[in-house]
Length: 122
Length: 480
Ligand code: SF4
Image (cartoon, rainbow over the protein chains, first blue to last red):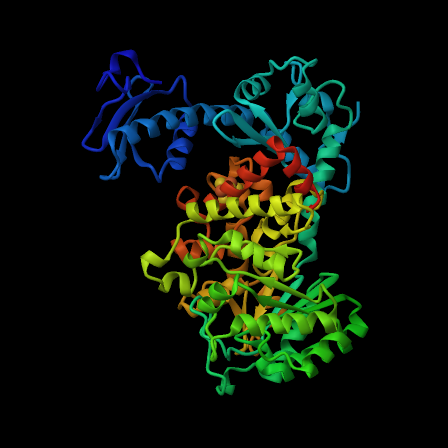
């Protein structure tokens, strides 16, 4: 999550809360909102669009630098970052699903290949 | 390890089943389960579903429940059913290896620019498969547990070594008197050497022919040069004769998409209709041989191919709507994966990869490869998919070789980054040779993978059609 005190509008037209400077956008992600696993998976998915460089977290906030290729325009970079934040939300949901269903998936796979019934009826 | 069902019951009204989801478009998500069933949800529905706040009286709730995406107190046998469906999909793996490719010669009379093997001049007999290697390969083939065995003859131009084909088919049939498998034979040929003797043999032994037809005359001849410059006419003549001898389905055709084809997908499809074919496989060029030798300006990216594919599919759907049944094979494979309880056995889209367990390739020189693409990669100097040699190795040592097992465990997409939580995973597969060729790594970083972009692009398009276009859905459902 972007902290409000981090928000600086670069130009009034894009109304973007991010600054694109020398091919890089820097921001902070709130680790109370996004799990580290969700952040890392999102960065992996966006590896073709930018390289994510993480610094050590400070007070539950993770500094991230998104480094774009030299040919990427500011407009494209800002749009990519918008999609990256959508992806973060998706990944966060996936982590929730994973936490809730991991044991069940193992049971279903075990049941599928077991000769005895592993799920006791009532 | 018995547990009460209650242990898996949520206190929040319903329990989520293990699911994966991916964006379908800007507003909707595809959600799949391990049995390969799918639903399409809006973002709000997805958030409600995962947050346990979907009211039971909503149609979405019922749809999710009936397809085992959630369990509630009334889902009595849902877990068992899901496990059963999962097993049905996985079971086909136990029947490996069904496809056995015999490269009977590397000699060829064509000089196609996109050829992916090192074709040899017609007189160079040292590039033919020996009888000794053919015998060993047949022994290997009958060791495989698959109840159905398909022998495909490849080259070069395999009909230049027809005597070896004849020998292999006759011997396979004789051996099968003991083994009792369902045998199928296919010769992949440019048909330039399709003599009456060959046709008679094919008719008597139930051999099918598969040839190349790249589109209308100018395009086909430009892509498939042969002395006389009339490959198209010769191919059509041969198809005609083959149909007369073997029946209308005795010969099938494959096309290869080059840079020159990109603007002409409708022309290519129309040519297939003109020649009476009922199916066409819109294939992209594999990253071997020709594709990597081409100048950058003659190559095309995966995004361009996906657009080519969508245009082609739209044209095929129009042709079907006008009353001519024409099936697109790539879509048909994916639809089987989506809707058939058993998925599809198409070798190039298996999970784990179809290499070795889906297909084995016996090269003219006795080398054994895990797939036809693995043989092509070897032509480029990368022997990652060479499993051994017919003269030196046993079937057991090849099937349990470190090379094969490492590739198989690497290509379980359930464990691969990005694939592990991708909704398209049950319909996708792994293509380790592609990733080895393009990234020098059999798993590949999927964010950069053209294979992944192609799969996602085509699957999103197909599911979008199934959801949004009733007429297209009717036609596509007939291809499963
Ligand atoms: S290769 Fe791509 S489309 Fe296929 S399962 Fe992996 S991430 Fe999904």
